[in-house]
Length: 131
Image (cartoon, rainbow, N blue to C red; front, side):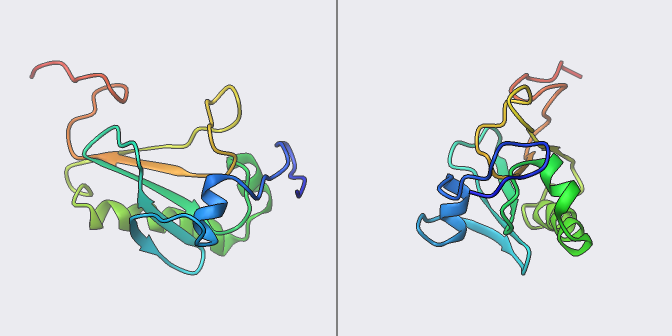
């Protein structure tokens, strides 16, 4: 395991690392040299895609402190591309990054949730008030 600044050590056996190595399947939405995006296996909304860097980054703190400019740009470009590919770029979508224990991060590999496909209200899972 590799230590990362401001975070726990990276665990190369985490589920996203295993997906990146091809040990576990995923329903791929987008991929480039730095990023893989795939459907969440427990979607919260009609569109729920995870965008992950291919590098071994525990969370956002680690990523922003140690990733290259190209990796950082690729992650955010991929979020926009996923929104376009999934048809939510014009109607709107939400991105969420949970970081660390207090942020309720469940997998110790940076991942961005791209959520959409309906009005999401103020919080995910809460129905918006009637217009």
